[in-house]
Length: 172
Image (cartoon, rainbow, N blue to C red; front, side):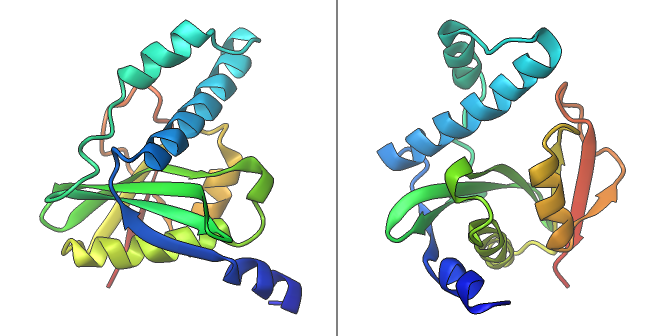
């Protein structure tokens, strides 16, 4: 890693956070608006309406990303919240990674890698031996990030209507 990349990565810190805190809710809204609008653009050729986006956000609560069977992480760049990720327990050995987001203007600065390293530690703290996730094929940046950090394609484990590809990572 060159010195510039190291400095950019060192500007990131990741901590657990209350998923209902204002900065968490703002990040979750930004995450949802981005992935939903990408879906609308791909399939309908337009952004979602404010009503569609708010309705969809309300229909995808994140309250399970809290103790005792989940947690929420916020990544800060130079002290400001710019990324997030959540974990929820699926079974005693497996947690699901969800709501992974780095604000577009800070992608490529090491925040995604720092976030996923913290996800691994957090998953272990929940007693997990494995992390799984699902995503869409059009979310190419996220898919590349997961593969760079040890995730491999696995068989489908759920039935989300938006899941098109599944990844897993053993923590052993």
